Length: 339
Image (cartoon, rainbow, N blue to C red; front, side, top):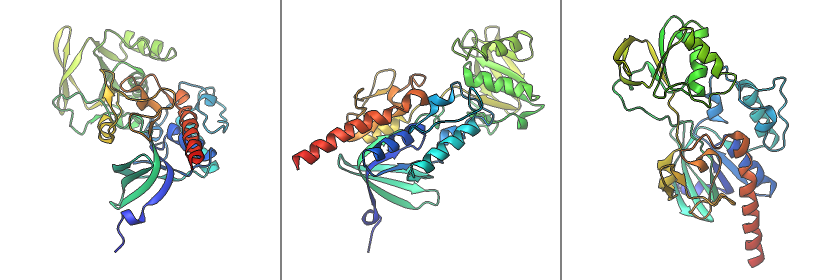
């Protein structure tokens, strides 16, 4: 009787994560003649899909380009919808083999003979064989939880999508960076009563220059309430309890957006044998080739930076594919010479 392992497909390079960086890695692998496949637990560019519906990128279109395919946009800063369309077109142009909605369950084997076990959305197991692996899983899928009472309530979300459902409701936004500022402003402009809570003394200094004055003015005019140097103690069904410089304060609340950041999947990396060191949780990685301490396993995108997720974006992570492909080409050439 044929087993799942007997039916495994064989590839030269398997990329875990079908975001822009993962796509760039697959494209560069194809360019040097390798058979590449991408596996993602969600859809193509899954993290971008889950960005706020009306989000505008902080960068210009050309800095989001991969595979030397121009990103044409009438806007100086493209929006989410334009980006999704662009990356779909890139995937079509290069005929990328993308296995969407397949979650990686475990990885077995070693350099030259990896076996990647996945489970699709119907619960069906699959096995993909590959000589090399690239981990480009990003970080947006794993929020930083606060571990406070009430965080599990259904009114609490760690992602903000659009403002309409929160019209005429008391909404608490936790955080002081770009995502919190953007959510607070959009919610307020669509009829929510918004309160911001941030543990810092003010909105973060790195909030984008065209957003910071807007949120500061709304706070100054008391159109958006703000508690700085403050934390959330407890989330209740109809209220939240805050610890502020003036003491404990309870305010009415219908919904909470805990926009407290995200982190890479360290457990998955450790399970692969990738060494994670230091308080910044940086994985062991050759900065020139991007190969990890595990032979044949490469890292790409934001996970290279560990906890310092603000260091790597699409704008610079998109070049990781070329670094990896250069090393793969060198190693494959050496293997051919030895034969």
